[in-house]
Length: 209
Image (cartoon, rainbow, N blue to C red; front, top):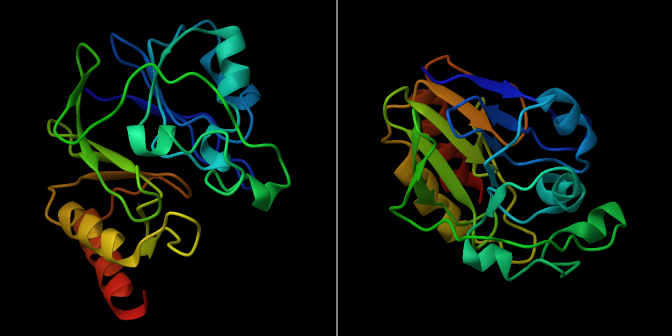
């Protein structure tokens, strides 16, 4: 059974989803690590997944790595953007670009094995070149980063590295998944007819992006 707790999502900061698996995993951290570290209590993470490189999702990674030693995973295309103020969107927060070690690349077709949970990696570019989503085939949980949001929202494509064509293709892949619960990078978790919500995201993208 998949057990997920959101440890962040305060203000402009992204959600930080803790997956209480045999091999504990955190999906994104947020602008700062303190909320996630407080929520973890004494849990030692084995994995830290970064859905993409934007500062509101990874700003707290370096701080978290001072307290714990998880394996940091991110798509190689976004790992290459770390250290760039424009590439990470740090200029929007008037902050230095985040820099931290990345231990492995999340690539299309990989499976992240958490022991009792297995997450399928989907490369879903558009918001950034290396954006990824994770899907649990057993529970129907989708971790979408900033590709789609509840209620038919989509991630911005007007930042450096964004692509309208890519995000439409990416959402087109997500809309066919038998999703039961949506864990997006921002906003509440949603379990209400999620495929219809993702379809609304696709319609919005095709009409306005």
